[in-house]
Image 1 (tube, helix red, strand yellow):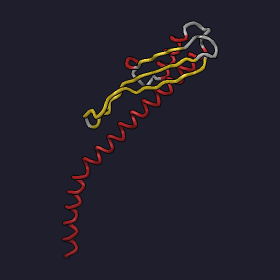
Image 2 (cartoon, rainbow, N blue to C red; image 1 turned 60 degrees about the vertical axis):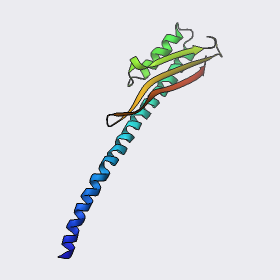
Image 3 (cartoon, rainbow, N blue to C red; image 1 turned 45 degrees about the horizontal axis):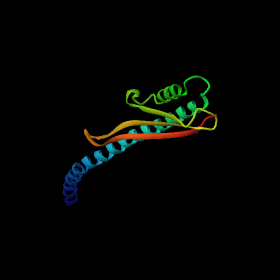
Image 4 (cartoon, rainbow, N blue to C red; image 1 turned 135 degrees about the vertical axis):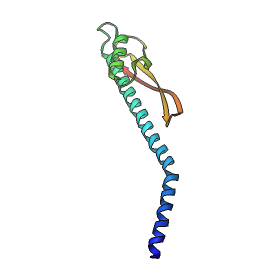
Amino acid sequence: MLSRRKMRQEQGQTMVEFALIMPVLLLVIFGIIQFGVLYNDYISLTDATRIGARKAAVSRQTGDPVGLATAAVRNAAADLDASKLAVTVTATAWAPGADVTVATSYPYELDIMGVVVKSGHLHSSTTERIE
């Protein structure tokens, strides 16, 4: 009989401990989710920058390599908001052997449970040699 009463008292203690820990656990889980979304955006941005630099490096004879590279970056970053994506294409010269650099920037916000913890811009840059 005594063990049953003691077990019932411990169940109440467990419920109180759970109620105290649950907000912290939710904060950690939502933080992990937000960092995952931010990392996915960074990977998409880096991949799009790489694709744009490759397009600029191989398209010097097909008209406007800057426009083609910019369009390639925007098409490759389909899961990002294109209106917020900034693309810069620079080249030392549009001749074989010269370097072309594609740089991109995309804004981010770390929003955990309705509170913006950090905001800024993700940056990525890729340099390719013109063929």
